[in-house]
Structures are given as C-alpha cells and as structure tokens.
Image (cartoon, rainbow, N blue to C red; front, side):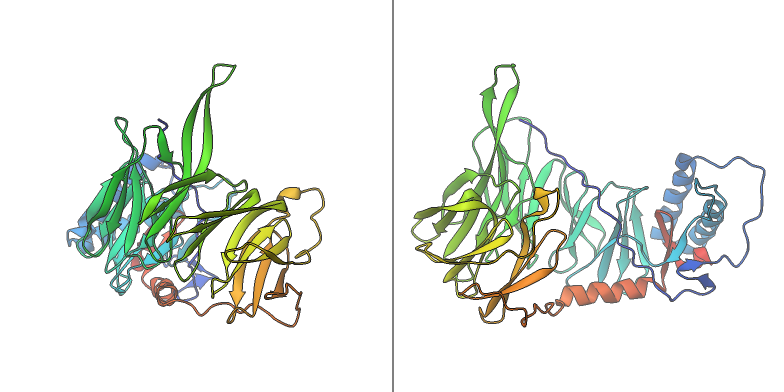
Length: 432
C-alpha cells in the first residue's frame, strides 16, 4: 500500500495592517538602527536554536528574559543580507494562515512558507507558544480544539496547549460545524481503518476497516448532515505489460446507513453533492450522472452529451444542476429528465480547454436562480428551472459566518500584538 503523508504548500495569507508605531506602510521601522558588524551572519540552525530556547522561556513565564532574546534575534535578522538587496521585511500582524477557536479564547497561526511553525495565541492576541512543526492547514473544531495537518493529523486543545489526538500518517476531513472529524490511518500492516471522531466527546462514533489495498488518497469530504463522507480511493489493479503496478482512482461514498458505494473518479475531480433533505447524493463522472437514494440505496444514472464535473441540488431538492463544460444542465430529481441546458457562461478560452469548465455554483434566493462561474472568467446567473440567462440578477456574497467574523477581528487584534520578521512571528515589542 502506498503511504499518503502529504504536505501541501499553501500561500501565506497576509494579515498585516496599519496599526504599528514608526512604520513605513506595513513595515516596522526599528527604533534603534541595527549596528554594522564584520561578523559573519549566523546560520539558520544557530538562529533557530536561540529562537526555540526563547519561546521555551516565554512559555514558562520568563517573558522578560525571552523578550531580550527576541529583540536580539530581530536585530540580527534585520541585518542579514537579502538576495534582492532590499531590507528584511518586518511587518505588523501574523502574516500566515489563521484560525480562531469556536469559543473565541484561542487562535492558531501556521507559517507555511520558509520556516515552518505553529503559533498559539490567547483571545487577546497575546502569543502563548511556538511549536517548530511542519504544518500546511489548520481548522477550528468545537470549544478550543483545532485540527492541524502536520505530517499527518494532529488535534490540539488550545486551552492547555496539549495534543488530544495525533495520527502520523492520515488523510482526514472535517464537517462544517466542526463537530465531526473523519480520518483514515494508513498503517503498514493490515487494513486501513476509517474513524468517525466526535469532537464533543473526543471519542470515535464509529471505526471500521476497509478491504486491503484500498486507501483514501485525498482529503475526505463530510456531508452537511455529518452522516456520510467521501474520498478518492486508490485500488491496486495489477501489473501492466511493462511490469509496473497499475492503480485505479475511484470515488468512494460511505453512508452511515448503507454499504460503501464506489464509482469511477471524475477528472477534473468533482465531489459528491448532498440534498438538504438528506435524501439524495449526486455525482458526475465524464458523461454520466449518478443519483443515489440514501433511504432505498437505489441508484439512478443518465448519460449526457458533454463531460460533467460539479453537481448541486436546489434548496428544495427537486432539481439537480450539473456543470457540463461551460454550460449548466438542469434536471428533475429523481427522474433526471433534462429541464434545460443553459447558454455558455462565457466564450471558450483561447488555447486552453482545461479552463473551460464550471468551477463554482451557488443557488440564489429560494431557488429563483443559479449563479455559476468558470475558471478565469466573469460569472453568470440563470433562472430556475428555465435556465434563462438573466443579467439583471446578481449573486450576493453570503453574510460572513460567526467564525469568519471572529477570524477577521483576530487578524486586526494581532496587528497590535505581534510582528512578522520574514517567516518568524514575535511579540510586537521585539520589533520596535
């Protein structure tokens, strides 16, 4: 079996704002210029050693001593030569990916470029600790729990800064509510095991094994009702004429009350969609649409003209919308009778058919219309169920969720409590 410990490089999200003293733009200008020195710059390993030691002092309560070291490190980093010849970037805020806990008492920032690391803050934006770990994503669960992709899956409790669960080689997904985590541990012996983990009780709701040779090879998508989940599945098929092992990619849909359903994987990949009434699951692959009744387990299929990727149900669950190239198909549920095929969202992109696919869709109002956009293109709105293009209607950005509001607020708070020096975060006083 392959091992799937994956780390995805993500662009850092800059959260640097205009609230620091003595600054040029977002940059903090040092109160005391860094003195010139003939000494050779220290290596990253030497600087990291002092950095980690200072954070250990900070965490243990020796903050005055730690601040002295932080200030020395910032002066040293400011004086380092850069390839461009421009000064080392020092700015306010935590310039990296940020998540705030559901209860608002903790925040986690992860540095995903350059020097990797995980930083923990309290609700007032005060730094609590730094962990020198390789991480690529962070998401909040319930209370003060966070799930981090750090060479596997790690769930931490921000209150006591302790690991709750660590699975070193895992693929996982979380529900929108943060109450459910579904993960698969990829052991080297035996069958890969799937777990449905409850964030409130911190225990498995379910755990079961899948057949040998099958493992989720990408992030797991959890349904809105948290009773079903899906992932891409790798199946060992055999050996080809050249003696190479062949592996087939499939989509696996696991439902709490039904057997596993396996279908060919869509290329480009498209995730299954779920109706609000919890009755239906839909999936598109190439020219075929698949509709699954979650109650009776009956499968409806229909072949269409043109390759399809994304699917979406109307709010009522009576219509299924599928992206087919640059067009939308509007079908009845469960008959899959074609009600309408819309005009293209835009003209084909010159020289790149890969861009000619619907990349996102949203329902407008009470099933009044559907908004759609293709890669690198303006959007369009079509009336339901007629599919008529209606330029007078526009998709309004949804009201930010409570967590999104809290995250934005924390970004602003951190502008006055911490600073970022290239790829390192320090208390704001270290950069003044």
